Length: 245
Image (cartoon, rainbow, N blue to C red):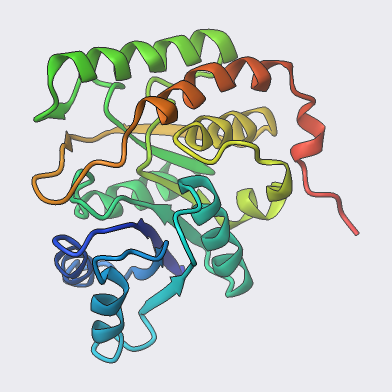
């Protein structure tokens, strides 16, 4: 049986964290959970610690001192998961904007289509976003179109944060060369995976904006995502490949 784990980075998610943990563990398929908390002052990590005995050997917590960025949280999680030989590693938000029921759909797509990276896409089948103002929908949609045009990457939702990686993909990437720390990280990872020759796949999901807690999106994060693609276009991709000993 494949070992599957979901990485959820958190910062001030006390309203959502217990609910998302219990939801994932209620699914028919077995997914482990790794919560990476960046020193949430609201006690998010304490809630996770309380639940660990109940979900022993399935729920794990890594605490970091301070808000260090989405990208570095995921890289920390990737290294943790690779060291423990997980076969499939997922990214998902804590706020239910990603439906946990879709985890199995991402996994099944990886198996059935022999894909190395599966993306839960808001834009591969129209625009499937709920509770966003139209201005944010347009920024996100056309931002993804801009990235697709600049990088020539065959993907509709280049900034998506609901994804599934095969272990062999993450084994190949040199994480020390990843430059983006915010949402640009999602673009950079997809671009690297594609340029290294792995198979990409998108499946449609419905993205629902959070109803509890506070969004982490900011203008600075968006600017990093948009302007960072120019540097990616000019980059030497070979440096991203992990050198074999």
